[in-house]
Amino acid sequence: MKFIVNNGGKLNGNIRVPGDKSISHRSIMFGSIAEGTSHITGFLEGEDSLNTLRAFQAMGVDIEGPDNGHVVIHGVGMNGLKKPQQAIDVGNSGTSMRLLAGLFAGQAFDIELIGDVSLSKRPMARVTNPLSEMGAKVETETDGRPPLRISGGQSLHGINYDMPMASAQVKSCCLLAGLYANGKTCVTEPAPTRDHTERMLAAFGWPLNVKGSTVCLQGPAKLTACDIDVPADISSSAFFMVGASIAEGSDILLEHVGINPTRTGVIDILKLMGADIELQNQQEVGGEPVADIRVRSAQLKGIAVPEALVPLAIDEFPAIFVAAACAQGETVITGAEELRVKESDRIQVMADGLQALGIDAQPTSDGMVIQGGSIKSGKVHSRDDHRIAMSFAMAALCAEGEIEIEDCDNVNTSFPDFVALASKSGLNIQLYEE
Ligand code: SPQ
Image 1 (tube, helix red, strand yellow):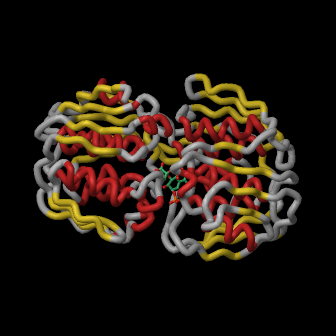
Image 2 (cartoon, rainbow, N blue to C red):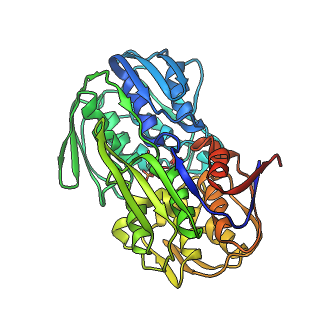
């Protein structure tokens, strides 16, 4: 599929974007290995979280739904999963593969994890290294790429792991294996990353100990079912935050968005650029802070993005690059080398696309230098990356002509109703079969 987005327009109205992808994955994982029945509301019915859901169904968990975001999970307990009949295919989802690797390391049966072409290129040694230290047996392709073949029946033990990179997936993988390990598993992170695993484990009755940058849990664990209200995804909201900021006359309210402080880097960065963003109706829902986010158009200015904010906005950089292209002056992003190992190389693919649209965007090893300017009409390639496709769609709001975006099928992994919701809000977007 491809998007053709006519230039101009503005974003208005009240919208609720789909459920948080990170929280949706974790709700299925913990609900499945808990004892009792968990009700999930606001679940993201995107391909990534559905792949996690199907994985547990394939291991014998009775899961009803999703029905309009409602999922009922009849948990089987820590040791109740059954060997699936074939390899577990998690499609495009790095979160599924890396978190499940930790959970599968503690099972009694052998299991294979496979993914699509993009996921098969992503690095997995970052999770197989600590898992091996814990006593797991995991085989990968030669250079640490998927598939992962995990041997069952291993006895795991807790470790103290100093993560070499800021990654919530690596941290969560170790903690999930730690649920099955004897003794204490501690993970220390070089910078704060999203803490949904920690918050949700506490909700499922297995609190962790957090001291500074180290999080520890005691194994073996036992989880008790609970109900989870999944807030709207701040990463999906980010496209609308940028779109409303760059399109004159915009005024949009994004409802019930998760504003966990480990995810709000995008708000801080856009505010530093001069964005007009207001949090309303702040409350805590099921251990996660949420708010309605009002965004009005504003003249953005280029900044040097503080490196401390990078891990807190890691998935929002494709959208932030578009904001920088529409801002006055230079924006410099450093310390973001992790962007090179996402669904695509998000530094290179965004720089290629921005250059194709007439913007001076220079990729660096760990970021980009962007001179704000006027976005021309043109054709860009999303390289099968959902966040690239949606970011370039928003760029049309401040472009001089139409933008054509190729390879947009993967938008369904995280934001199934993007085209309908974006058009309803005022984006002139059309979807075509390629
Ligand atoms: O699941 P996947 O494909 O890795 O998704 C991405 C995304 O943009 O949707 C990354 F490409 O989000 C990751 C995020 O970048 C989701 C995530 C999580 O739920 O724990 C953590 C981040 O990854 P990492 O590598 O920094 O731990």
